[in-house]
Image 1 (tube, chains in turn brown, blue):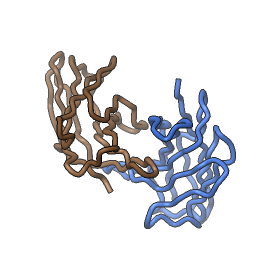
Image 2 (image 1 turned 90 degrees about the vertical axis):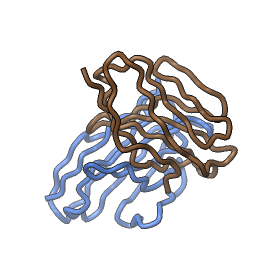
Image 3 (image 1 turned 120 degrees about the vertical axis):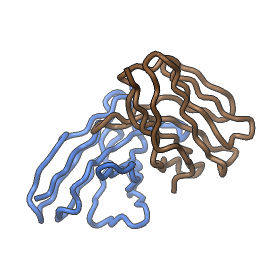
Length: 110
Length: 116
């Protein structure tokens, strides 16, 4: 079962930073937080993942709170192509399966 | 790197027939592959975990005799929907993970199945 809670939808102005929150209050110490996005009728695309420390790559930044009970995905300069459903996933420690939650539908507005 | 393909991208079949969907890791060896199903306006639901050379592990509520999974090589896993019915119509997506258990999953583009 999914261990994450995300807002159903969000809007963001083009060119501004998009901050997508995720709650994972029951996360275990060795469970990673992953972020993927899915554009309509395509397979999910990997964005970023982390365990404890904040992470940054060419797509986004991931901020994980010190108690690891929540995290925020940051798209620094949102474009229209970033419109998608964003999934925050806690990877199971045993078996390493992904159980997807409902995700956040992000709409980037011109 | 880390490209996963699926074939076919879409398929239409008659009720009662079987349909095979292929999932390939193109530029890496995948010791583990996963199969998901997604209904319209819903999230992905994990169906099964497939390890190369061994039997798949199915999630609770997924009929293993209906959804046959074979992972015969490190680059190929297949999902066969047997005796398909209209309620099996869905978007089927696979993902592949490289050798280490901590590695990221990379997803295929999905296969749209429509059963008439």
